[in-house]
Structures are given as C-alpha cells and as structure tokens.
Image (cartoon, rainbow, N blue to C red; front, side, top):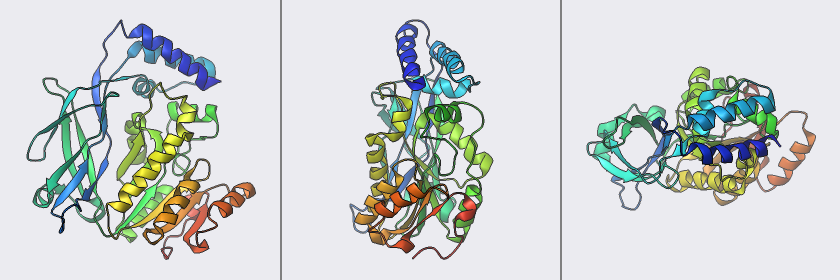
Length: 354
C-alpha cells in the first residue's frame, strides 16, 4: 500500500514540477570492471565498462515525496537519498571520458544512463593502472562538454586467473528487509545503513588471504550508490566493482523492483559476463535466501561447475523451511560446494575452496 501510494504521488509531481524549476545537474559513476579482450589471440587489449548516470534534481518532487513518506511511515527520511530517486535522467546528452591518454565521447541513453564499453591497449593499461593484485584499478573522469559537471570513476581489473568473491548486498551484507515493504523503505531512505555482523571482517580476511578481488552484484538501484559507498567506507568492506540496475518510476513499484524477473536476468547476465570474460578465474558466490539468489547461483553452477569455488547463502539458523528450499534448489550441487550462514562469524576463514 505504501509503495503504491508513493508511486502515485511521484507521478503527479513529475507532471506538475516539470514545468516549474530546473534543478542541479550531476553525474554518478558506479565502479565497474575491465576484462582482457579475447577476440584476439594472444590478447593485447582490454575492454573497460563505463557505468553511471547523468541526472537533474527535482527539488519540488523530492520535497513532496519526503513529506509523504514521513506521513505514511512515521519516520524521518534522508532528503539527499530521496533527491536521487526523484531526479530526472538527462537523456541523449553528450558526455566525454577523460584521463586515459585520449578523450572519448558518447551519449547518455534515454534514461540518462552512461553504459558504454571502450577499449585500451595492454601498454596503455600498464601505464594507467593503479595498484596491483586485488587492488588493481584504472581511474578516469567523465565530463559534460561546455558545463562544469564532472565525476571521477574507478574500473577494477578482472584478469584471467585468480579468485573473485561476488557478493549480493541487500540482506547479505547490509540489513534491508526486502520481504517487507515498510522495512525496505525505512532501511533504504532513513538512518544509517546497518551491516550484517562480521561480514566486513571476513571479507577483509579473504581479500588478504586469497589475494582476491571483490564484485558487488545487487538488486539495489544505482541511485543508491553514493550512500552505499559511504556505508562501505565506514564499515571497511573491500573495494570492488558494483553491478546495479537503474530504478525509474515506470517500474511497477519500489519493492517489486527488488524481486522482478528483470533483476534475475540482470544478475545472471553479470555473472556470465565475469565467467565468460576470464579463462581460469575462480568465483565464490555469496547471497541470501530472501530473494532469488539460490536459484540464480544454482543455474550458474549448472553451466559452469568448474568455475564456482563455493556458494554461501545467508539465512536464519532456525529457518527450517528455508533450509528445505535450499536442499531442493541445490540438489544437483555437491554438498561440499555450498553452505549457509547467518552472520560473518559463521563463515569459514580457510580451506573452503573444493
């Protein structure tokens, strides 16, 4: 009920405020991934994926939604978060990628999204890469021609060998409560994000122990990225690429967005992108039982069993029904290849890659 009313209010204010004020424009860049280009043998180039959003804030719409939220849920909400969810994408606008030896320009799509791949040579990569091993990344900038609008981005290298931990965010490492409309709205728009106990510590340990890279694959929309980054920095989660969708008010509603079939396809496509673009890299998959992570991970394991080192699913320890569901979903996966946890202290530190 709350999310349906929220959607109706947004629609009404979108129409009204579109004719009144122009808001502040800005760019969000979401950390992405780079892979070797295997179309040539031997591979001499890298494919880099540029991901972000160019938007214009809508103050009136955001303020109306904030007040409506507070009346419906009886909580104070973070206005900065609401501003990004009520902003309008700058469609088909010119943007330029800078800082990589040459300028490359492209256009945003019809939602204002920036999602173009580009290519650099191996020599260029060696020149621009910062750090090595699990910290290897390329820094770049995106700017809008003739405007003082620019943002800094990160692209993390995913080479052919090594270990990558691919982790869900909501209800895997961050408390969201996606099965409850009210809890999801509160945990998304109100107060500080809360971490699942012990997850940052075990992720930091794995990063050092296995010289591993991390990628975060989530149903959360990219409008949340700036606030998720604050959460990650505060809790000291390992840095890595983020793979997020984009929420628009043409989606059914905010809660359905988290559970939609589009989310399942998006998550599956991203997992396959990592696997098919790296020859020998091993992947450890972490998710939760509250969404469709078990089904997605089971289908990926069925196609690429030799590339999946382990699957970890978060569930409550007393959830017998959930355990039965997992036993059924993972019936064709060897038992030593998957296990469950409730907090980070339940996860093994060593010797779990089999």
